[in-house]
Length: 208
Image 1 (tube, rainbow, N blue to C red):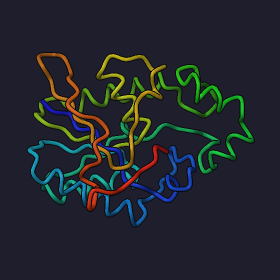
Image 2: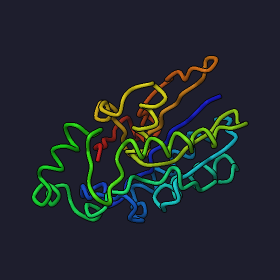
Image 3: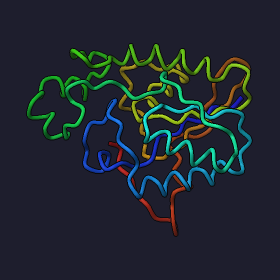
Image 4: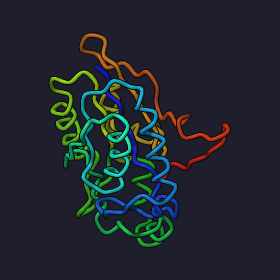
């Protein structure tokens, strides 16, 4: 079995460092190009299933892969983005001014982060682990197209790492992470791969 974790392409809110969460923000022009280039990567890869967050930025990225592989996209709420509550639609600077203490906890002790209307990492982890188990049932190779937080949490789960290590994982727009299996154990083959996005060897992405 192979599990491919794909973060969606760039949106204007990524670019402007605005918290997205459950807001349905589409890909921008660059993100659409990234989706196309990600699709080309998977055009030469044998996969059985494509699962996507239902939010449009993920679905648009998944459709780029579907177009290259002729595998239909299954939308799955288990892989939707974390609910950021009142932070959604605010810039990083705005959150820092309005919720300085809470932001500091999110940055330094993400596993202890709690706010009304916001999912904890423990809550996110429970739903995405259940979703991954269902998505991989009976499949040889699965692509999961989702969001930065969800990719990070899935990597932590597959590597058996605690949620407090959340910020030790980097996940850029339209990046690909691949796990294989040795017996019952997940094995990381590569992580945060963006070579498929490079033109003439050059491109750079932030982590927001």
